[in-house]
Image (tube, rainbow, N blue to C red; front, side):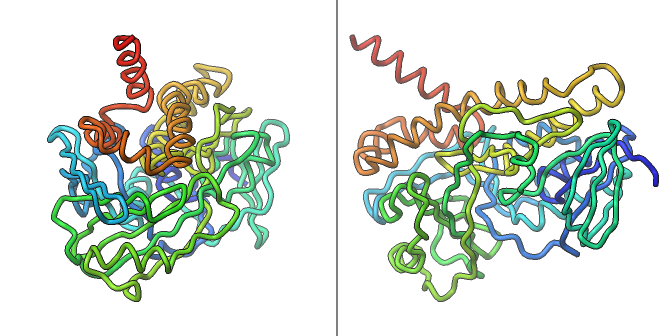
Length: 376
């Protein structure tokens, strides 16, 4: 059996990003994907245009809509609109299209792909990782990247990720027409979802619809009830939505994301934003940073992968620590939060800047602290 450099479990956005960057540096990489092909992957599909910084090829050709306005509402009323700057817009993509595009880039760079590879065992012997599929196939690799999403069992197996995983209850759906959602406009609806919000993101002649609750996720979302209240304002009937519910693993504290020759990326690493549920930007960021750390490690320039965990803490985790605090306050008192937060003159712009990648939650918190100090 040939020993490869890196085996990547999961062929989603984070896994394919990691694979591309490793393969482009001539590393022997294999993506292990349990599905035969990429089915329709319905999710919000929103990501900051800043993700372009992590790729040498243009992503804009696969972007369905460039968002320049973000509309906020409370129970479909009391609406405010924020404009995004031209330099850092918010992009909406179809997940299946993004994943397929990134996979093609990885394969064209020399990455191998094994489909229907449902991983059931990962063990390390003599510094070599042995990955076994349900059908008995095996792969041996110097390193392993766990990129199989929110339902991944492997973080607990290897004592990586947050000590206590936290999940948001979400629903993602798609409607095969635009309704009256305005061009280049994303909609965020607060008030209809307890401890969370609903959203509508435009695609090319379609719309991604979703909702998430972030504090009390013990019970299922009353999806149909929320859709009946939310969709008519957008010109839709609830019967038009095709979608599904799932538990989304969200950021829940600083934690170790690497072991000896093993890394977590994307949703498997619990990186999703605990306030706005943004998952694509941290997925692509973690794939890029994981590949960078692995290249140094494989080339013998460093003797451990700890720099990956540290980099993700600085570049993402520090902001999410503030995002978690904001989420806990805002979603416990959402009406007050909407009136004093979203409706504050500068607030919509700040949220838009977070979505576009221009600002972090830490930046927002520091501005508030300075304002309070100045007032006192």
